[in-house]
Length: 303
Image 1 (cartoon, rainbow, N blue to C red):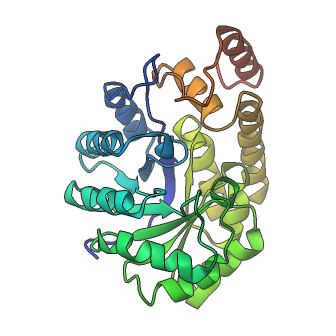
Image 2: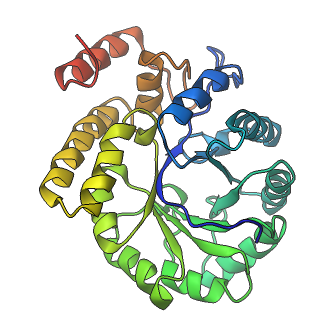
């Protein structure tokens, strides 16, 4: 693999800006990139769940990734999510990511016709990873969305035999026992990117050194603080910061979850991400008023 380095710290799962008609609005990414650069995060995870990947066309995903890579200009890493229900579309996206300068690729399992075994999952990923064989490849494990709940430890052990660029997993699951097993596997051979923002502290206790999350876009100082407190052994401070994160996450859930609620928060912060693409419903003006009030009450936004 070319210039492979393990990820550390925060990787923001980027939103896909859209206009009022639900069409991709690439112009917003200019301002968005500067926000990320100033947040001192390690990188961005483009067109994943937060980025509404499976609601986008292949061409849209390519153009979004190209924009992020160009504007990032090496200031932070750009990881391309290339997962798709079509293996050939995923292969095309992987090749495109490699040709355009992405730092790594990741892919979730297909979620319509699902793999029934670890072998099925590996067989599906082999040609996708090979399409960008010089880039690190992460298995994006998110059973709550894909409906695929296969043992990740077994996937890593067996997958590495036929996927040379398999370096780890983006682990978006609350099975902390399995997560710990993945981190400890072969004396820490694989990266495990923690994927649940509201329990980041748990992943760090197990030994995770990087996380990928949507709330890192608008709450980076809290998560930077959690990483620092854990490094210094200040568990009490880390717990306090994690509870601040949980306060925000509870509000995000109240307004439709990480994508719908998160986009609304970005809009309130002046990064015009617009609405989500249907079937996710737009946030009403009344909801925006209540959301702003809730965020002011917890001190996230000024009065």
